[in-house]
Length: 198
Image: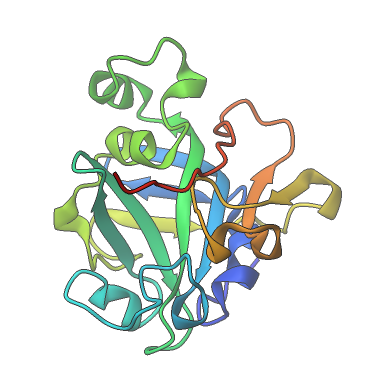
C-alpha cells in the first residue's frame, strides 16, 4: 500500500493503523491514532496559526512534530497535507514488535509488553523520541515508516472522540480517534473535563 501523506490527516490516520514505525533500534506497530486538522480544528495546536512551537506542522508532510505537554511528557505526530495546511496525526499507541528489551529498559514501570507504548507519552519513551526529534524526516536518520501491504478492513477499525480534548474540538462532531478493534495495546479512553478557574 502506498501511503499518501499529502492527504488530510483524517484520511491518513486510519491508514496508519497496522503500519510500522521504526525509530533507531525499536519498531512499533501502530494501533491507535488521532487526526488534527490545523487551523480548521479547535483541538489542534495550529488552530490559532503558526508559532515557534508548531512550525513543523506548517511545513512539508512526512515529518515528525514533537511537543512537550503537561510539563513532563513528549508526544509525537506525523505531519500530513501540503505545506501550510498544518494537519497532523498524533501517534497514540502501538505494539513494540522489535527492540523490546531496549523499550523495556526505557519503560521500567511497564508490567507487561502491551503497556510499553499504550498512550502517546509512553509511546515516545519506548521509541526514544524526544523534543530533539521535532522536524525529523520519515525515511531519513532514525525514522522509517512502513505502511501495511493493504489497508485494514473497515470492520477492524473503530473510531470515536479524541482523548482529553475539551471544548468544540473534542465533541462527538470530531470523532477522529481511530484504533484497531480489540487490540490490547490501545489506550483507555478518557473524556476531557473543562478546567474551572479559581
